[in-house]
Image 1 (tube, rainbow over the protein chains, first blue to last red):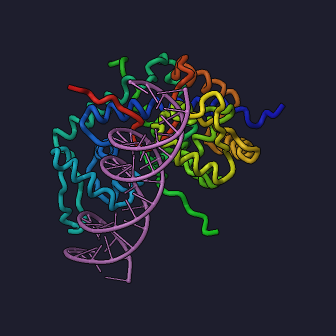
Image 2: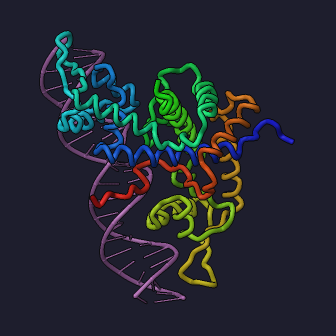
Image 3: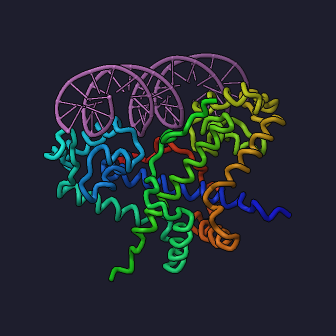
Length: 156
Length: 156
DNA sequence: TATTGTTATACTCTATAACTATA
DNA sequence: TATAGTTATAGAGTATAACAATA
């Protein structure tokens, strides 16, 4: 009779949808010749930000950013620009090519997400529900997979 | 006017929700003293299956299963049982303790998923929409994170 | 002294390849 | 010869720690 926890199935569905979404993400990203972390990073660079800020956005340790940006810079998608105001800082700026790639990437991520199986109305509802789940935390961390981003270890 | 791709925001929401879900998953699993792959494996063992079958369910390479099951067996959650019908095969059977842990794990995964922010009615709708997205593929791969499970490489 | 970015190193998750026992 | 499981190894994605330059 428990009305409290009716969501056995819902959790399963979530796992399944996430698997779909992840597979779609991986193949799209590979198609663009990007590594997953590079793709996540690119998606954060609409406006120029420092490497430190990028690390914050992505929930990565700052040390991890160096290699990711190295790759993006070599491919000519991003430029490191010294900040005159603080010479320790490097601002990350998308090149024209970088902007193109981000745009194409986002476009491809939208398509074929299986979300296409939904009607426009369904998607509207979905948007409303997901927004409710995410809550008003706009800083809601972007998705990255791999090991836990950071789990506070119980110092039992 | 493009009515074709209205889902910029929806994709973002999905990323965010998945990040939430993933964090919840990681901390829950760690709380149970399991590694993520162990948790995924446990969740597949309602019925006894062979290691090979488990690999199939999880989308892991079979070689990866050995270590995972080693850990579960050491913790007394799973037993390897030789199959009399085919002596190469090892059937994986949950112990009583294992059954308890799976139950607790699933319970905790249901709770605090942020899905709780939804009303029962919302959840019902969500279930319907997600089912639509997943389609009738019941073998929809369980979620596992880390590198792409397998991306068919274009033999250009 | 504190902070940005870098380097070096290590750990986790997963795959591939080579092996064994059995079929 | 093919298949189930194991072992050894390698690679990707992270983190932590130590360091240089700047603040």
